[in-house]
Length: 261
Image (cartoon, rainbow, N blue to C red):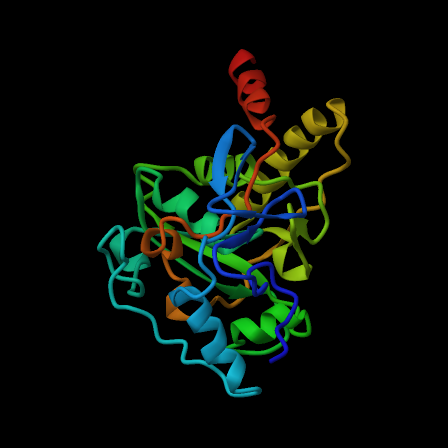
Protein backbone atom coordinates (compact mmCIF):
# COMPACT_ATOMS: atom_id res chain seq x y z
CA UNK A 1 0.00 0.00 0.00
CA UNK A 2 1.43 3.35 -1.05
CA UNK A 3 0.81 6.23 1.36
CA UNK A 4 1.17 9.91 0.44
CA UNK A 5 3.49 12.51 1.92
CA UNK A 6 1.39 13.60 4.92
CA UNK A 7 3.12 13.93 8.27
CA UNK A 8 0.97 11.27 9.97
CA UNK A 9 1.47 8.60 7.31
CA UNK A 10 4.58 6.84 8.58
CA UNK A 11 4.03 3.20 9.48
CA UNK A 12 6.40 2.16 12.23
CA UNK A 13 7.18 -0.83 14.40
CA UNK A 14 4.86 -1.20 17.44
CA UNK A 15 5.39 1.41 20.16
CA UNK A 16 7.93 3.35 18.09
CA UNK A 17 7.35 7.01 17.27
CA UNK A 18 9.05 9.63 15.15
CA UNK A 19 10.40 12.67 16.95
CA UNK A 20 11.18 16.18 15.76
CA UNK A 21 14.86 15.18 15.89
CA UNK A 22 14.56 12.79 12.95
CA UNK A 23 15.02 9.48 14.79
CA UNK A 24 12.77 6.93 16.41
CA UNK A 25 12.21 6.36 20.07
CA UNK A 26 9.90 4.36 22.32
CA UNK A 27 6.82 5.65 24.16
CA UNK A 28 5.71 9.26 23.75
CA UNK A 29 8.02 11.97 22.49
CA UNK A 30 7.68 15.62 23.43
CA UNK A 31 9.52 18.77 22.48
CA UNK A 32 9.03 22.23 23.88
CA UNK A 33 7.93 24.48 21.04
CA UNK A 34 7.02 28.12 21.40
CA UNK A 35 6.56 27.78 25.14
CA UNK A 36 4.09 24.91 24.83
CA UNK A 37 4.50 21.14 24.93
CA UNK A 38 3.09 19.14 22.06
CA UNK A 39 2.89 15.38 21.86
CA UNK A 40 4.35 14.49 18.50
CA UNK A 41 2.84 11.11 17.63
CA UNK A 42 0.59 8.42 18.96
CA UNK A 43 2.63 5.70 20.65
CA UNK A 44 0.91 2.80 18.89
CA UNK A 45 0.59 2.71 15.10
CA UNK A 46 -2.08 0.04 15.31
CA UNK A 47 -4.62 2.32 17.01
CA UNK A 48 -7.87 3.65 15.57
CA UNK A 49 -6.16 6.50 13.73
CA UNK A 50 -4.04 4.15 11.62
CA UNK A 51 -7.09 2.02 10.95
CA UNK A 52 -8.73 5.14 9.50
CA UNK A 53 -5.72 5.76 7.26
CA UNK A 54 -5.80 2.16 6.04
CA UNK A 55 -9.53 2.33 5.36
CA UNK A 56 -9.34 5.34 3.06
CA UNK A 57 -6.09 4.27 1.39
CA UNK A 58 -7.57 0.95 0.23
CA UNK A 59 -10.07 2.58 -2.05
CA UNK A 60 -7.70 4.34 -4.43
CA UNK A 61 -9.85 7.06 -6.00
CA UNK A 62 -12.87 6.31 -3.80
CA UNK A 63 -13.72 9.35 -1.68
CA UNK A 64 -14.60 9.12 2.00
CA UNK A 65 -17.87 10.52 3.25
CA UNK A 66 -17.67 14.15 4.35
CA UNK A 67 -20.53 13.82 6.81
CA UNK A 68 -19.60 14.98 10.29
CA UNK A 69 -21.17 14.62 13.72
CA UNK A 70 -24.09 16.90 14.46
CA UNK A 71 -22.56 18.31 17.66
CA UNK A 72 -19.06 19.55 18.49
CA UNK A 73 -17.35 16.88 20.60
CA UNK A 74 -15.98 19.44 23.09
CA UNK A 75 -18.30 22.45 23.03
CA UNK A 76 -21.54 20.58 22.43
CA UNK A 77 -22.80 23.15 19.91
CA UNK A 78 -23.85 22.37 16.32
CA UNK A 79 -21.13 21.77 13.77
CA UNK A 80 -23.28 23.41 11.09
CA UNK A 81 -26.15 25.88 11.38
CA UNK A 82 -27.27 29.33 10.30
CA UNK A 83 -24.70 30.91 12.60
CA UNK A 84 -25.06 34.42 11.20
CA UNK A 85 -28.71 34.56 12.22
CA UNK A 86 -27.56 33.89 15.79
CA UNK A 87 -25.24 36.91 15.74
CA UNK A 88 -22.14 34.72 15.38
CA UNK A 89 -19.16 35.45 13.13
CA UNK A 90 -16.86 33.17 11.14
CA UNK A 91 -13.08 33.15 10.83
CA UNK A 92 -11.06 30.81 8.62
CA UNK A 93 -7.32 30.25 9.01
CA UNK A 94 -4.65 27.71 8.17
CA UNK A 95 -1.55 27.22 10.30
CA UNK A 96 -0.22 23.77 9.61
CA UNK A 97 -1.62 20.53 10.98
CA UNK A 98 -5.29 21.17 11.65
CA UNK A 99 -5.48 18.71 14.55
CA UNK A 100 -3.51 20.89 16.95
CA UNK A 101 -4.68 24.12 15.35
CA UNK A 102 -8.35 23.38 16.03
CA UNK A 103 -7.68 22.85 19.74
CA UNK A 104 -6.06 26.28 20.00
CA UNK A 105 -9.35 27.88 19.02
CA UNK A 106 -11.93 25.71 20.78
CA UNK A 107 -10.14 26.59 24.03
CA UNK A 108 -10.83 30.30 23.52
CA UNK A 109 -13.60 31.97 25.49
CA UNK A 110 -16.36 33.11 23.16
CA UNK A 111 -15.76 30.45 20.53
CA UNK A 112 -19.05 28.70 19.77
CA UNK A 113 -17.88 25.94 17.42
CA UNK A 114 -14.86 24.86 15.41
CA UNK A 115 -14.34 22.52 12.49
CA UNK A 116 -11.40 21.40 10.38
CA UNK A 117 -11.45 21.16 6.63
CA UNK A 118 -9.98 22.18 3.32
CA UNK A 119 -10.05 25.53 1.48
CA UNK A 120 -8.31 27.39 -1.30
CA UNK A 121 -7.98 24.54 -3.78
CA UNK A 122 -9.12 23.65 -7.27
CA UNK A 123 -11.91 21.14 -6.78
CA UNK A 124 -14.97 20.62 -4.62
CA UNK A 125 -15.22 18.15 -1.75
CA UNK A 126 -11.60 17.00 -1.71
CA UNK A 127 -10.64 14.01 0.40
CA UNK A 128 -7.78 13.96 2.89
CA UNK A 129 -5.84 11.68 0.57
CA UNK A 130 -6.27 14.08 -2.34
CA UNK A 131 -5.24 17.11 -0.28
CA UNK A 132 -2.16 15.29 1.01
CA UNK A 133 -1.08 14.56 -2.56
CA UNK A 134 -0.65 18.31 -3.09
CA UNK A 135 -2.50 18.08 -6.40
CA UNK A 136 -5.64 19.98 -5.37
CA UNK A 137 -3.95 23.04 -3.87
CA UNK A 138 -6.11 23.07 -0.74
CA UNK A 139 -4.85 24.17 2.66
CA UNK A 140 -5.74 22.43 5.90
CA UNK A 141 -7.85 25.03 7.71
CA UNK A 142 -9.83 25.63 10.86
CA UNK A 143 -13.23 27.30 10.69
CA UNK A 144 -13.96 29.23 13.88
CA UNK A 145 -17.51 30.25 14.77
CA UNK A 146 -17.35 32.88 17.50
CA UNK A 147 -19.42 35.43 19.38
CA UNK A 148 -18.02 38.89 18.55
CA UNK A 149 -19.62 40.26 21.72
CA UNK A 150 -17.21 38.07 23.72
CA UNK A 151 -14.12 37.60 21.56
CA UNK A 152 -12.94 39.85 18.74
CA UNK A 153 -11.55 39.02 15.32
CA UNK A 154 -8.31 40.60 16.52
CA UNK A 155 -8.12 38.10 19.38
CA UNK A 156 -8.69 35.25 16.94
CA UNK A 157 -5.72 36.62 14.98
CA UNK A 158 -3.65 36.81 18.17
CA UNK A 159 -4.08 33.06 18.66
CA UNK A 160 -3.38 32.44 14.98
CA UNK A 161 -0.06 34.33 14.96
CA UNK A 162 1.03 33.03 18.37
CA UNK A 163 0.47 29.38 17.47
CA UNK A 164 2.70 28.91 14.43
CA UNK A 165 5.73 30.19 12.53
CA UNK A 166 4.44 32.32 9.62
CA UNK A 167 7.91 32.66 8.06
CA UNK A 168 8.17 29.06 6.84
CA UNK A 169 6.75 28.56 3.36
CA UNK A 170 4.51 25.50 3.04
CA UNK A 171 5.84 24.05 6.27
CA UNK A 172 5.26 23.89 10.00
CA UNK A 173 7.93 21.90 11.82
CA UNK A 174 8.20 18.47 10.22
CA UNK A 175 4.92 18.95 8.34
CA UNK A 176 5.91 19.84 4.78
CA UNK A 177 3.63 20.57 1.82
CA UNK A 178 1.43 23.30 0.40
CA UNK A 179 -1.51 22.02 2.49
CA UNK A 180 0.37 23.22 5.59
CA UNK A 181 0.78 26.79 4.39
CA UNK A 182 0.06 29.75 6.63
CA UNK A 183 -3.11 31.46 5.45
CA UNK A 184 -5.64 33.92 6.87
CA UNK A 185 -8.90 34.55 5.05
CA UNK A 186 -11.14 37.62 5.27
CA UNK A 187 -14.76 38.33 4.41
CA UNK A 188 -14.79 42.13 4.88
CA UNK A 189 -12.38 44.99 4.14
CA UNK A 190 -12.06 45.52 7.90
CA UNK A 191 -10.92 41.94 8.43
CA UNK A 192 -8.42 42.23 5.59
CA UNK A 193 -6.99 45.40 7.15
CA UNK A 194 -6.78 43.73 10.57
CA UNK A 195 -4.91 40.74 9.14
CA UNK A 196 -2.46 42.89 7.20
CA UNK A 197 -1.84 45.26 10.12
CA UNK A 198 -1.16 42.43 12.59
CA UNK A 199 0.98 40.64 10.00
CA UNK A 200 3.13 43.71 9.41
CA UNK A 201 3.62 44.37 13.11
CA UNK A 202 4.56 40.75 13.76
CA UNK A 203 6.89 40.73 10.75
CA UNK A 204 8.88 43.62 12.21
CA UNK A 205 9.39 41.72 15.46
CA UNK A 206 10.30 38.50 13.69
CA UNK A 207 12.87 40.08 11.39
CA UNK A 208 14.39 41.99 14.29
CA UNK A 209 14.96 38.61 15.94
CA UNK A 210 16.57 36.82 13.02
CA UNK A 211 13.56 35.37 11.24
CA UNK A 212 12.74 35.85 7.58
CA UNK A 213 9.73 37.72 6.22
CA UNK A 214 6.20 36.56 6.90
CA UNK A 215 4.88 34.43 4.03
CA UNK A 216 1.27 34.12 5.21
CA UNK A 217 -1.27 34.14 2.40
CA UNK A 218 -4.02 36.75 2.86
CA UNK A 219 -7.01 36.04 0.66
CA UNK A 220 -10.76 36.50 0.43
CA UNK A 221 -12.59 33.70 2.22
CA UNK A 222 -13.20 30.77 -0.15
CA UNK A 223 -15.51 27.79 0.18
CA UNK A 224 -14.89 25.65 3.25
CA UNK A 225 -15.14 21.89 2.85
CA UNK A 226 -15.45 19.77 5.97
CA UNK A 227 -12.70 17.24 6.51
CA UNK A 228 -13.64 13.65 7.31
CA UNK A 229 -15.33 13.18 10.67
CA UNK A 230 -12.41 11.42 12.35
CA UNK A 231 -10.37 14.62 11.94
CA UNK A 232 -12.93 16.75 13.81
CA UNK A 233 -11.81 17.57 17.39
CA UNK A 234 -9.13 14.94 16.89
CA UNK A 235 -7.04 15.81 19.93
CA UNK A 236 -10.09 15.59 22.17
CA UNK A 237 -10.90 12.14 20.85
CA UNK A 238 -7.22 11.13 20.90
CA UNK A 239 -5.53 13.02 23.77
CA UNK A 240 -2.09 11.64 22.89
CA UNK A 241 -2.46 12.34 19.20
CA UNK A 242 0.00 14.13 16.98
CA UNK A 243 0.49 17.89 17.32
CA UNK A 244 3.16 19.46 15.14
CA UNK A 245 2.43 23.10 16.01
CA UNK A 246 4.96 25.36 17.63
CA UNK A 247 4.96 29.13 17.61
CA UNK A 248 8.02 31.35 17.56
CA UNK A 249 7.53 32.56 21.13
CA UNK A 250 7.84 36.14 19.89
CA UNK A 251 4.25 37.21 19.38
CA UNK A 252 3.89 38.47 22.99
CA UNK A 253 6.40 41.20 22.03
CA UNK A 254 3.85 42.50 19.51
CA UNK A 255 1.23 42.73 22.25
CA UNK A 256 3.66 44.43 24.63
CA UNK A 257 4.52 47.04 21.99
CA UNK A 258 0.84 47.69 21.31
CA UNK A 259 0.11 48.10 25.02
CA UNK A 260 2.97 50.58 25.37
CA UNK A 261 1.61 52.90 22.68
